[in-house]
Picture 1 (cartoon, rainbow, N blue to C red):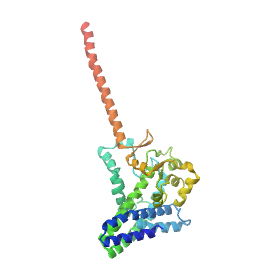
Picture 2 (cartoon, helix red, strand yellow):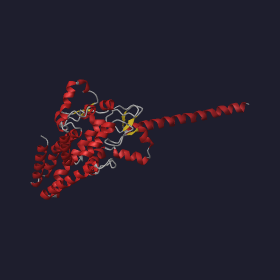
Picture 3 (tube, helix red, strand yellow):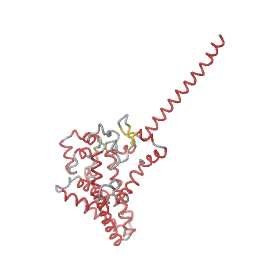
Picture 4 (cartoon, helix red, strand yellow):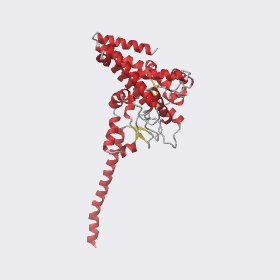
Length: 337
């Protein structure tokens, strides 16, 4: 029961707007976004062939849901498969993940390059502006798969046409203003929640990144993905996607069976475990430190650079003082002679 409550909430939000209670419309966007996130998670399971036993059922349900989530199903399924096949691999970054630089790569960039990365990693960009841009604008084209044949293009364009038709019909019935106030807050909030979940699943302090030579899918699945241990209500809305380490170990397990895996294998509960409160700290971790083998913050790197610079200045000063102290001594000897 996910689509029906979403439709009912959408209608109630529209009626609240018509009656002049625009603030109620905005409040209703919160639970509506929760149901939309759950729909996306069902689409996610369809992409893994996990929700139904038949592939055709998974694919067509996924395509229909993709219109509601603004996510071209077949295109997304391919990029997400790349994510599963390369997650935690330092030599295969770039598709289906959050851009992550190593400390060495960050320091090697120009000042403008470092500023751009800092802006990209700012929470307002990552969790507000970025998600809205990703779902509303970027996913209208099969970016990253331009040369992957006609299927990603058909997926993106067919989804775009279906979205345009639904939006046109809704605007014709209720008007542009009502549509934007009812639907846009729900969509933007759901997008932000979705990106936040994806971020926390892999961008936590003790995650795992390896190069091609040492990377293994099983190890990075288990230790490079978190167990986001959410309260029961949030687990339902997010369709247990917080049990992400198990999901990466075996993506064919449907979301409704993931809690059973934890019950049957309690040793998995504490691996990569993050609570809701602990996850907030993850926004600080922005760079992979290959020496410490963990994610670190900009502030931590800056502090280390300043400490090293201070040590160099102190060392230089001591050397300078040593030379200055040695000159009179040398003068005495030369005078004696």
